[in-house]
Length: 396
Ligand code: ADP
Image: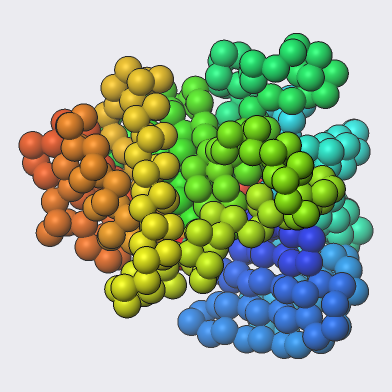
């Protein structure tokens, strides 16, 4: 019996979950927010309790120290030495990392170097890794990449039809994201369907604030909707997803908004999507509430959102030449009865059909009618558990 912690470090936050392994029991979880700012907030949840403290936390090392001391303070562990493993989520693994790996040799330098591909994420992920190295230098430390699951994509899927040199010199290709989530729900789907993963063709829809859809064949990613960065693919809370690239030079010439790379990135990543179209919120619950009150912009935002998901499912039915199941996961996929119903209703010709009696709030598992040819499943994702399991594999 050992304790392993899964870490998801952002630029000003650190999300964590402590497991007892190999039993896979969650002992505690928490979130530290506003790192580097005044009045940072540390929340710890355990045994049905939620404890919060507000204090100034300067950096990730101090955040990790506070988290470890909280674990002792709340009697969740007796001493640091009870924690024998840590797994860090890293957003970009580029072409270096085809699977999770121990933090040793030049791994940390490579994670930092890949900050070129994920400037908002990888430096923060690296700060989390360093913080644990400082405080718990001897435990098994593993990095788990959002992109690894997608390294099985064939070249025709991951290459863009740009001049070759932008791939060979600038590494511009499709990397995808949410890999741990797609991998996890594909595995769970095989269990629900009672068939070997190797025999299945699945379309996994991770629809949260960020969202991506993946075509999974025999347990391997063969295509995914996010691209070079997590901006590509379906419409998201604040991100455009795919748009005609010619829009950008056009708006650079004809508006005062698109001047610098930072402007372009901000507008496409933070001011678009559900937020940009509804002019109200990036949160699907707010969009649905506004729709019920007759808000037309929210209505349109929802329609575009559903349309893009349907189109990607259609693409992947073509890529896979059919599918055994479509899986919904993440905040919207797991919780929104409306989105699931709208998406599937519009593509029923392919042989999927949701049973309204099964498609209810809180459901997990198969929500299809008995006669449906393509099963529709709701599966809660668990990226932290995938990280904790990966750490176990490396423990001696
Ligand atoms: P992130 O990408 O930040 O991890 P999540 O997976 O937590 O995001 O998903 C957040 C999204 O899930 C938000 O748009 C939120 O409105 C949506 N969501 C959560 N519960 C519901 C619900 N009951 N109905 C509709 N949308 C929901």
